[in-house]
Amino acid sequence: MKKTFELTHPKIKLARRVDAVKHELKKYLKRERNKTLPIGADYWDFDCKFGNTEAEAEPVHVSQLNKLIDKTQEENLTSFYVEILAKPAVRRAHDSSDDESEDY
Image (cartoon, rainbow, N blue to C red; front, side, top):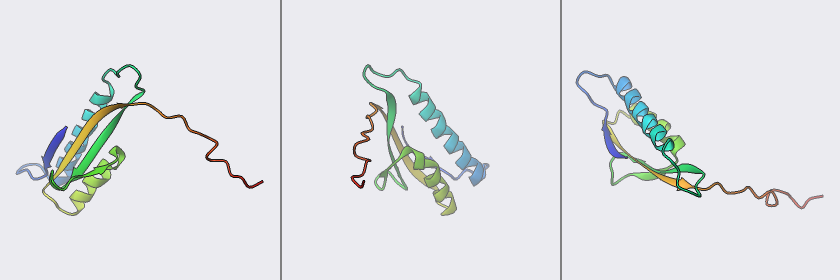
């Protein structure tokens, strides 16, 4: 999904429009997560970018999207750009030997 969301609408208030955008992103993520995984993959990972325009978009974590959308609402911006690309990923095993300290 690569989309610029407009927050201005002649009949819909800003807060309601922001909620609609959040809901649309949530539906998209759910739809992507429900797709069949390729063999060897454990889960769907997402490459996300967020910015005022497509040129200004910077990489962010998927969990930060709602906070960034709220921030645009507080700053009274009229639009923002979101890019979410799904990719299959494999979980890495946690190596406990790195966490242990040598202090006895």
